[in-house]
Figure 1 (cartoon, rainbow, N blue to C red):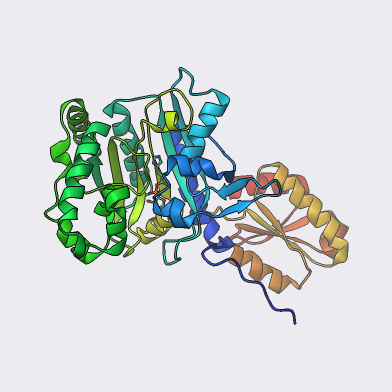
Figure 2: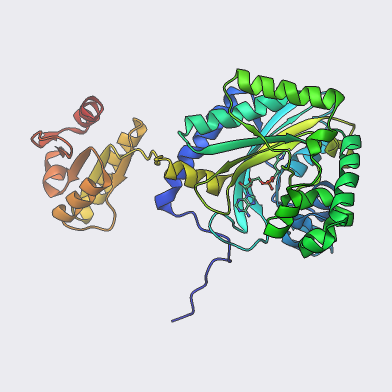
Length: 420
Ligand code: HAM
């Protein structure tokens, strides 16, 4: 026997038993984003590598070590998208739909990061995200957070915590970066190797370190919020006011920074305590400089992305289930002569909008009845020699005690629609 081939590590099949769960979550997403006027955008899975280098940042984990990058036959460096924000902006600039216009976009699809796989962390994973382009105020930040909150509520999720922070103006960030670098410079020996390396290049990222020693040093580090003043402070206050007024629970975490370089003002993250290490369900923030960084005219923007594997797991964990519709009818087909009639009856019922399974592969009546019953179908319709001769069909209710009955094809449609 030939050796079997396995899927690529960290890239999973979505098996039929779970796809209903995903459909339920995806349709809740569609309904919620639609109710806020967000429109779907689909961008390619592959982009020029430079797009991610210029947006996410050269010194981030994603660009330094997690991208699936390859040369195509023309020797162009291409990358499987690790996220979709940069592509939304790229598409907006390329197609001119950002020019003097505001846009509310949403997307859903696979992303790729070469991380160490574990529960909740995969190399191919799916994100649903929204991006609001063209608004600079805290109103849109609040709207984005309301979209997420509504979705969690619609899915019946519990145990999610929202943390928010602001990275302020670029001036404030520069001053904070210097203060942090000075402070950490004095305690260089106590922080982890990665953080030491980032001290010069990207000290803000050190705030995200998981190393216990570094975390202890960070306890007494300068506080980012102390550097935020003026309009940035007022915007952050307004955002909090809007959240509170609309019943969104949150916590300000002045240590919250994000793993991508394009963020500017508000940043946030929803986490859950349900799954150990991979606790971030949804995260995002404001990225007011990305459009210019990617060659467009200055335009403020904000958005988030949510990990679907984690969201679906949490939905299941919170008692959610997939809403697969059972069949209305299972057609039992007895003998080769009955196949053609069985199929034509099935098609006729489907024409009426009914969900119908026609038995394939033969088998006796008992076996077919058993399969029909297990499928959850409401009715079994039997077609064998007798039914062909008499131009009738035998109908049996699988969910009530009602006697089985013989009907013509015309009567069958009426009967099933009435009784189901
Ligand atoms: P991110 O924090 O890199 O942000 O990813 C967002 C979410 O994607 C995470 O909170 C997590 O739920 C999920 N995720 C990330 N990596 C993995 C993985 N390896 N396996 C499973 N799930 C994962 C972004 O991607 C930004 N583009 C978000 C954004 C949109 N900011 C503004 N607009």
